[in-house]
Length: 184
Ligand SMILES: [Zn+2]
Image (cartoon, rainbow, N blue to C red):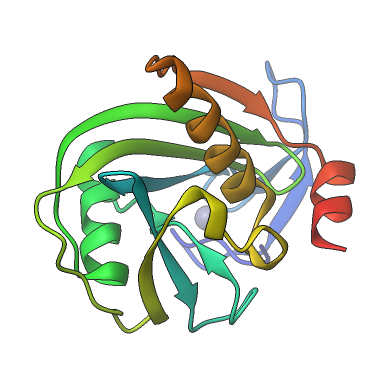
């Protein structure tokens, strides 16, 4: 960040009075430009014993399988964001959404939040950000071709929780090391 989006002035990095960490501050209009983690909202769509995955048409990780997810927009709720992403990427609609996985990714300043939900009907198609969308049985999940560690972990938890028919909300941190290892 170089310039103030309020007045166009040049920004400097310093600790504002009463604060405890460096911020981008505009010395011209005194605006402090806070930077905070971004929220990614997504879904784990389920149809019977199968789960829906999308093959990414965009970078990063083009060609790898993922769950429909994306950055939350201003003015929408978390659930609306998750539904919108599922519609955009998989042309699919869901019912009975339940919050399921919360991932902290402090190394990239993001928080991922996934819902579980059943497809209203088994109709879906690739949206503009997907090459392919399809249902997978547990035995057919392309574990080595998943786009991100959060996707693998969500599926792992789901299949394990499904055996108990109990789906507690989980909050886990994905550290940089684990992310690197799983991508390698
Ligand atoms: Zn300014």
